[in-house]
View 1 (tube, rainbow, N blue to C red):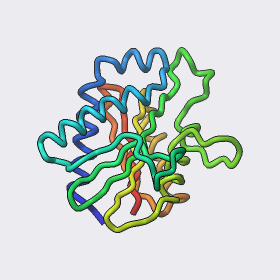
View 2: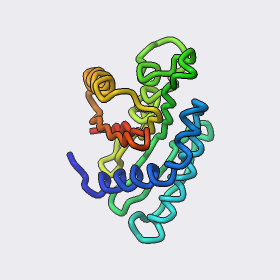
View 3: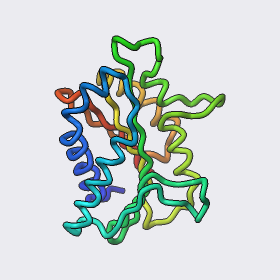
Length: 187
């Protein structure tokens, strides 16, 4: 089921993040920095703008789930008839200078049972465990700096689609800025 208003909101976030971060992306990539909070600030400023121009009703950052002080969703957005829950991830793909870190797309999309899931799989599972409601849309929003080739991304997305049937995956890359986005929306 397609929700044009939500898809429009996602595209506005992608455009805003790309435009506001373009001067800092070379530093982030060169230093191989994981800077999810940096992108959170950009998103907060965009959501504040969207609220001011009545594109959304309200938003909350690190919204508590069921008043549980240890579990939160990165962003809660009330977009009139729909509530949107967004989990944010920054996938800092290793550059040529720091290849020994082994942070590649497979690392961030690993289905391993051992250890903590540091990528989007943990976010998908977290969102899946939340109560389902027809007026709530669940989204994993992954920002990929220094994105791999389109072929590598497509290959990994096909694996995700096979293992995570409840999710619709979308990828957008802006090669000139060296940034990409993997958007996963629960069906």
